[in-house]
Amino acid sequence: MQTASSIAASLVVVSMVGLSLVAADVVAQAAASSSDAASWTREQARELPNPVAYSKESIKLGRRDYLRLCQICHGADGKALENIDFEATNLTEPDFYLSGATDGDIFFSTKAGAGFEMPAFRDKLDDEQLWRIVNFIRSIGPPEMRPDLVPEP
Image (cartoon, rainbow, N blue to C red):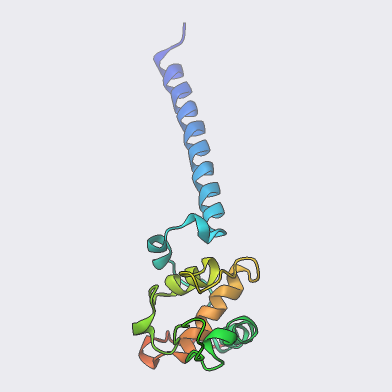
């Protein structure tokens, strides 16, 4: 016959194993969702903090990818080219962004696309590259919306 203390110890072990399995599942789900913007809603993405430091280097690298993939619609200066086929957002005026102006909004729009005209770049850029583009876009926007530059090491 088991004693009350051995039963209690067994329950603690079972509870701890159960909690470990639940915790592992939560961690796995979070990791999966962080790598796939399609699993988020725009509202969830809006709150995402930019994990890439706002530095001269990240802005330079973000500009490189921006010029390669984004300038065709938004212009090298971000002010948007005139085009009779579509209307690109002027990235120097966040007040007029149609899909939100937080770092998370910009990341989500770039990764998953926005509306009919903005394509998704999830297959062309990894998350770090996308966040660096966010930093570049911040650098061409209003100074009051720019984060403080992180000093280079």
